[in-house]
Image (cartoon, rainbow, N blue to C red):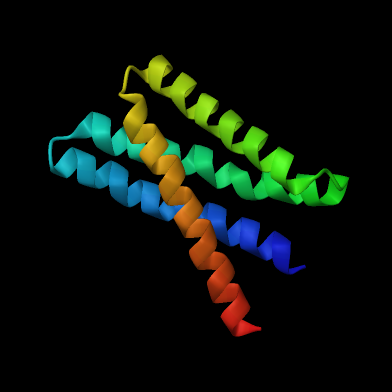
Length: 112
């Protein structure tokens, strides 16, 4: 199923980009920024799985989108407070994960 492949590839690509962000943060001596963006990417990558569940449950997509993104943002902010990082960097990571998901979906669409 194409949707499952998109979710799987999104998670893998987000983890790869998170690894780069994490390492770049250490190399550039900006550890909290790199860690925040990396964790945000991982949190945001879960959006694909949540979308799959919404589609399967036949919940109205508009309502679920607002709740889903609010939930992911709240999770990112909670993680930021737990690790003592600025929430903005985690939210940037969540946003980057959405761009990764779009890129993966476009790549899948072009292959079809």
